[in-house]
Amino acid sequence: MSRNVSFGIMALALVARVASGAEPAVPPTTWIDKDTGHRVWRLTPEPGSSSLYFNYNAFTPDGKSMVYNSPAGIHALDMASRKTRLLVPAGPGRNRPHTISVGQKTNSVFYLKTDSETKITSIYSASFDTGLEKKLVELPAGKRVDSINADETLAAGTFEPVSATPRPPQPKTNSKGAMMEQRLASRTPLVLFTINLQTGKVTELLQSRDWVNHLLFSPTDPTLLMYCHEGPWQKVDRIWTIRTDGSQNTLVHKRTMAMEIAGHEWWGKDGKTIWYDWQYPKGVVFYVAGVNIDAGKRTAYSLQRNEWSIHYNATSDLALFAGDGGDPGQVAKAPDGQWIQLFRPQKVMVPGATDEPGYVQGGVFKSERLVNMAKHDYRLEPNVRFSPDNKMVIFRTNMFGPSYVLGVGVDRE
Image (tube, rainbow, N blue to C red; front, side, top):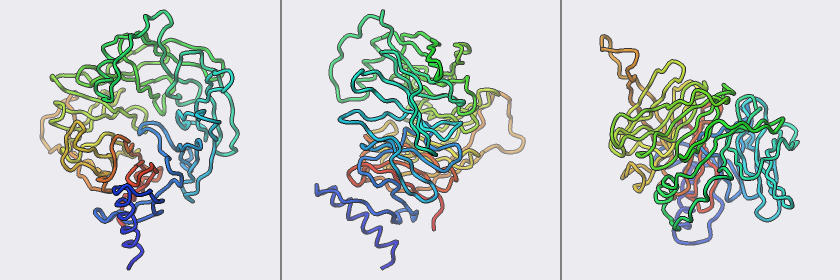
């Protein structure tokens, strides 16, 4: 029996044990997915380990390390050796550091940590090179931050004004959809702000009664922030950008059809293009769309229902895209959508076709399945991203019981 086949059988046996309720065993370190022929690696040794949200930067600027989380704290993964080390240990009890992202300028991870005695939350950085932890600024009470800008001088976040009328108690629900409806309907005042990581100065950018969420700075422009109006997507104009002086508050995608939705946005590596899931209308026709915010040029790649994914990502040269799939309970209601997918974009323009500067440039995705996710519980979103060398798609999964971070080769062996 070959090594590849034996690892595949081991993986299937582990899945069977989980399904039967037996104690989950440690997954193998590598195997070949029997349904796709692609090699898979387990990148993290800790049960309960997980990668960052799909659009947060997880890699150091030199491409040598990736950050991930576990109950023990914040870890560094060496991309060449695949060795891991604990970078920021968790405190006692539930006092764990909360990762924001890896910096775009220095080999540092930025995170939040709350003092167990004073209860004050502060922004910290830790160096991948030296391990040195540094306290940057304390956050004023009631404020949260979600993103660090490209030159690592600002963090962006939101807070509810003290003068705001307290939000009425909401009925408890296990439904994410119901929660989002309730939060949107509450019309709770919210302030979008930045905080200077050297001086602690807070600058308010926007006051809103809409639910502002998913803040993400451009990876190249330190003055440009993307954010969303959160809520059921068919009820909001979701994707926006704003400058760090509060100017140029701009809607990125304007709806032209009832029940049209756009969301799960992310920055391209150029820091000028925003990509997102576009459905025209919701749950019927599917695209991955992009808009260059400087030139206004728009692109849309179509894909089939079973190719739709909760999240997508792309290589810096846009030669490859990836998706994390979805189960039948997701918006696409795909009967066979539980796969990590690789997409090769193809344009459909032909010589002589009518084209105008304002036209969307159409294309199609040619898909290839990388990993069978049939045993994955999609309440844990896999959150795909490419490795810095574009040879691997990295994601998290609970297909073996506890969550781990896996990587799958883009090319078959």
